[in-house]
Image (cartoon, rainbow, N blue to C red; front, side, top):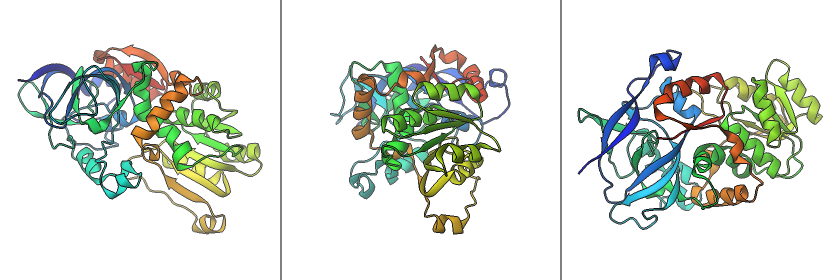
Length: 377
């Protein structure tokens, strides 16, 4: 027996804008095979539109196509396959786009985002079980996006991709915890391990960057400086804990050094752009830490003055998914949200965007007028 559902399918990557006209995502009626052993059927109630999705659409992050897009989501478990005991029908869950195996050396060592099995599954656009359960109207197989494929009414995922959501957290907010909050807050708390009183700059104020600002303020950093090319995003960062806003440009490094009397202790690069990383490096004081959380096109390279790296003892740290352990970190972050000290609602700038409006939503995301738009399939 198969299940019928509506899904946003990407058949070819394109940067032909506006996307509302070129319509790279087609909302189609597709079929979905029921969950097999070690799989879970989830009804998606909220899916965040992230720059990582846009990067697949425009080709910056090449993926196998055609694909049911979307990786940041929350929903309700509808059915579980054989052998699944982690979740049960009716459970409210958030999706994680790295379904770690739990038993390899990296998983056992507390670094599930490095799990080779999960990375292979995501690279090959399949579930960790090996299946691709979506089919289009002609019966052709559709690829899975990061083990989630969230731009659909129903999806099948691994239970390793799911974390329970407490009742006090609305699902349209819980969705952004699966990517934006986990990545941004994790970059600050897990990768950089920011300490009270350290000067922090966050460069790039999308969902990840705004989350990093919130976490830096929560960690007691001072000052917390937000940097972006869009003035409205500086205001948004100030509303969630930034003490200063700096407009990105030729004088941004000088301004950051003046505000901190010599440079920041920690710079979080969340823009996924080589220029942003250059700013982060130049604005960091001796002994400081540069955390790279943004994902640019694979062709991008960086040039680092080695004498400065050695002589000033700076550290450049990669941070994928905030160096997080989702089943450890998400319950903590949910608790902080429930306590009112992690204002993740601020990330959601548009709620209840219909799935049929996904291409217009891509245009708003590209224009920088939105932080997180929530699709409601």
